[in-house]
Length: 121
Image 1: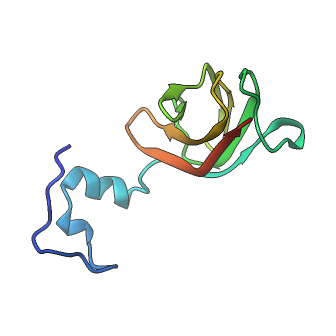
Image 2: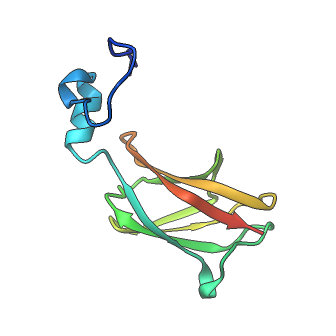
Image 3: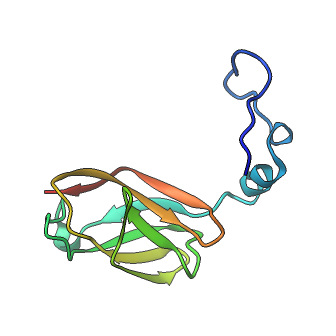
């Protein structure tokens, strides 16, 4: 995909239309753009995952495809199970303490980012 700068010095909110975008981007937007993450749940009502990894985290949302990949920042989750198009379970890798973005990336390149992400403590 090639990203091209739109003509003009500034873009006003609400002024970009799909006709101004490259066709593949426009089609992705029109089709819904890929997965959506609505929530992230820790096991046992915890509010964080341990730095040693191994926690089973549940993502709920929509449009997760059969080969969805889960990444915490740039680290792939060591185990991912797609239970349905709206439910994915993954195991956390070992990470330093911090808050990390969680990415769900479908095999067609569509992706979602969970913000504020996952808390590792």
